[in-house]
Length: 328
Image 1: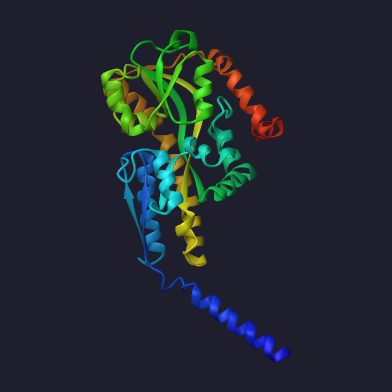
Image 2 (image 1 turned 60 degrees about the vertical axis):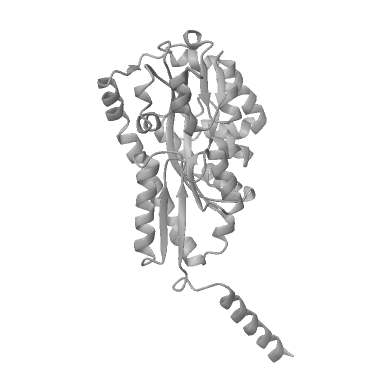
């Protein structure tokens, strides 16, 4: 009987090994999608990611980068494609991800993060690891936190030093409850729309302005049609590299490890690239005529968005908010 059981185990093991291709035999080409241009840190980071994956798998795995919303109009559509398996890899802001994985909304609470050092401590620690694990339930494999950056307000009408000055502006936001509520409580009219539509909407005056990190604004050349760039820093916007779980489950474990490790490594590269270039990009845009408003009353902005902070603090629980605030 024992010999029979041992034989069954051997046969089962052989079957499992045959069902999963060895990493050395596995070949695939994956598409990365994003709303941003190839010049944006997302694009530069994704290109580097592809180069490293090709090198580390001896060319068995190829990664093709599709910038400028080539595979889907907006980030929500990209995430839906990821769930369905029609899109392989997503690099984009966490904002729309909160609609699929509610716990991710916590990072979009206004004035939650103090600075970049605080960001890294939170997202690379236990809190960030748990948030990445949570997206599995939505059909995504969370690989790493990349970076979009601290978001700032831009428009064509007023400098935006205070929320009182910016009151009544019609501002494009992501389809994100935390962002929309924050602006609403500050007296600004949030208007969610796909990022691919923003440039033309600003051109024709459908909206007065938008809010985004420096790199996004620069890469999309919004300085050509916007006058004021107020350094409000009202929300820190992380980015994510997500893999379609439908595709991920078919990859051999050895290759999964290569992909995950490379995504984390390139995340550090992409964050540094984003931060190092911010001031340079601001000065370049100033030289082109953009008015960069540096003397922003951040205390006034934070006070105006406090109701949104309090509302989401209740939703997520004081303990989770405090865990982020107290991270050092």
